[in-house]
Image (cartoon, rainbow, N blue to C red):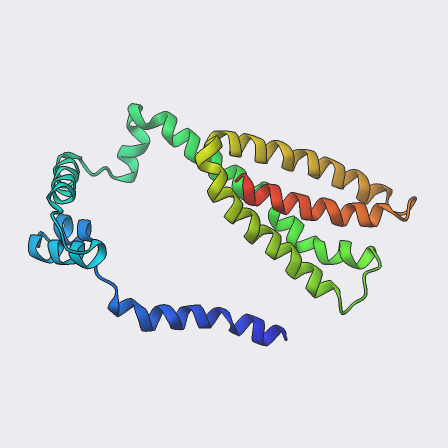
Length: 201
């Protein structure tokens, strides 16, 4: 089953490969990058149907003017630019915490936790698949929550809940030899951690 499951990802790539030539280019790309207004109008008509789309074209022209007046900075210039310092700090902090949040350790050790929880050997791959499905579904849920609560609330909430879950998971893994039910609690915490990771970071 696993070879077929891994090969199934190639199906979506094949669908994209076949259908992509039939999709129109982005109108903003055609107008801003290529400078081809006629192709831009044609793409807009293909995407939005016939009608007067001058307002959209005017918006793209404003965007083109803004892009033309913006200076492109090199990496060292970005690091030296004082006006971009806080944005750079925020970006580095978010990317660093994303790498060090523990999701890779959870995925790496989850098989061992499931094995210790006395799951049957043939069931462990399906439980691991369930963990992946949890992350997928929570990521979809995040796309609906982000408009309502904002990115900052989801980041703070996600990281706070992930820290709490990791603290509890450390405790349950330490006590799993004393209480038999701690194994199952650890499994639940793994699923919760993955859900909070998908919703937050």
